[in-house]
Image (cartoon, rainbow over all chains, first blue to last red; front, side):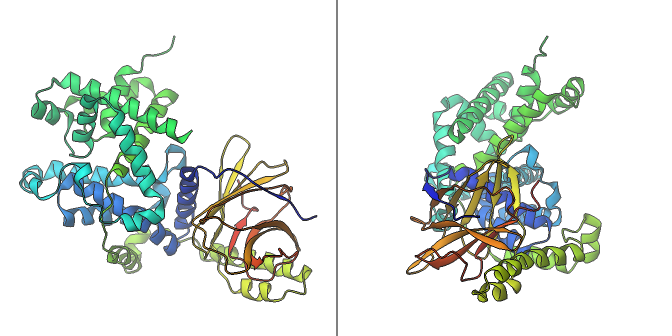
Length: 203
Length: 246
């Protein structure tokens, strides 16, 4: 074989690279690679904790949820199906489901602590930016926030109440006074739009 | 006639956000049943919404996490082998691990035999445990391979089997050191051929290699003097095993 030649090209979309890296970590995790597990944990646990904390409103409960979710990942990495989506969304889905389950069980307890955690996404102090900066996640945050900001306000409000506050569709209708049918339709339209906008960014 | 998916789509959108309650939970199950397990559009809708919901969490500012959690998880697993076995242990069979650990260094040993002037590479690589490589199908015909190794950062290679050329992308790669560059190697049997040298700019590498990698067993990256030697002079920092590709 003769020596090959190199040609510089435009940088790859870092989102693709990031997902390829995640899938590699998951493949190594299936073989019991502890370093791969640590890599996945350090990459996503801070955002997973932020999500859990936003839903359950208590830091220690959020850490318990993160621990429980990552324990499930470590014990059964085969539960991730690469055909069904990205590693990051799968992980966040596991954390979110656990957080919502918890608040549904401990509704009264959660509401008592509600004032303890800042509400608005924009108002939160960026405690861990120095960590996530290395991981390329601020770019993801910018993309998702921009897509959310692009939604009509009434759709964004419903999505945020449902996802970040852990409210069910009926609870949102009750809290806002919006008819249940309207909550459902705004959710569907908002999710369609978010899905399409995020997909557009990936192209 | 195309079936209307509006009802199931609405239910799935709410479900992805965790907001489904009341009779709608049962309604979603009925809708799933009526569309059937082979409903491709249903699967696409569900996956699309799940992906979207998962990404919403990244709008939040990350929170510091106690590093001890990861040690507790790993420690708990080590101390509960019985329950772990019941859950399905992530550990591979021992002989598979040994086989994986043994295979790649042997490739490097063979490569080093062909380049006898450079002994160090074989010695160091033989003692190195390298995790195996993952490949994913990038498009119908393309393959994306992620390199693994001890070096920080990420390096991936995309190529089309049977066609010349491969594209390499890297991010967060450390500087190879003063007077050094990264050199890409294609290993086939006992022969190592340089794919060229490259220096990252702000940790980023993006190059196309004009060579066929169709019969290459292993790709590797070493740090080499900037004159880009034709034989490797150091141990591999990153490798990608192409023999296990799907």
